Amino acid sequence: MWNRDGAVEREPTKGSQIVQPVSSALPVEERRVAAWVGKSVIFKGTLVSSEDTTINGRVEGTIEVRNQGLILGPDADIRADIVAKTVTIHGTVFGNVRASARVDIRATGRVEGDLFSPRIVIADGAVVCGRVDTLPEQSDAAKRRAQLAIV
Image (cartoon, rainbow, N blue to C red; front, top):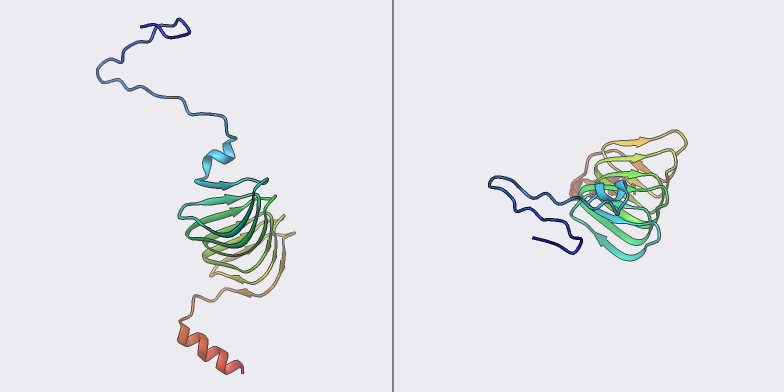
């Protein structure tokens, strides 16, 4: 059979598979992640994802990636509270960060808000202005007792 270019298309033989090439239109970094917000994007509201997410743009509101990883790129400007399993910060965050597994603030990262995670890594050169809490998640009753003890 002939196609528009004049080349001959071969019929697949029994047991062979036709493999379509992967589009290389996107940079490699963008193709590796499941959800991606580019640096020219401004998002206002609640961003919820059930897959690993990378953000390089601006987000205002809240970010919930509860059981997945969140990467904030060097161009990220986040003005939101964050909840995720793991959070890696290369950019700027104004808000509280709560991770069930780990928070990793890289040398270019800046956080102005409280950090809550059992494991927190802060690289040399990173900036953190806020409270750091590495205690495991407390029950509501334990939180009330702790608040009453403080008062």
